Image 1 (cartoon, one colour):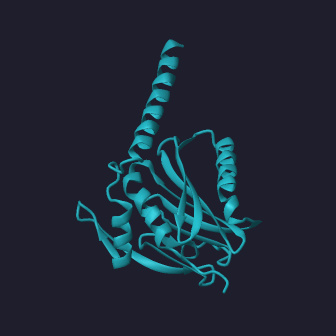
Image 2: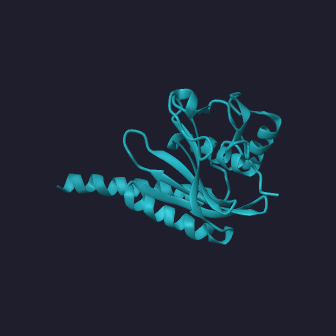
Length: 209
């Protein structure tokens, strides 16, 4: 029994240490492979070369019946090309199966005003935490992007054999809630955290005239 508890507390300590390291790193971005600004510059140029000479090429895709334009790494393939069907007017899903990366956007039918975004984000966070006890919250923030507020939170899911990292975001668009997420292997967080935020910063949402 002692050995079991030792293992349990060691695991807890490891998880807490990891969480603290990531939380501290949020302040200086030193753990990221690239900065968010560098990722945004890569998107504007169409490609980004990393320190190890790996090149990421970006593709710009129209979403939600051409009402949204978003630039993504070209390793992410739209779901409809993988044999699954989603309603393109409501949901957009791309993935890199080999890399274990999944990015999605969903238009909820729920009404949401911009000033309610942070409360709505908290509700999503709490619901997910209850449904998935392996979730460990790393950070939460409200970003001001293109004159609107996007609520975001980041979490680690400590599951075997591959822990993963997820960034969830929510915004009001045309009076309704749009929920999105990007999830990837925990080991890939130093690259995909800045990439995800760069994708959010450079997306173009059309509003009714």
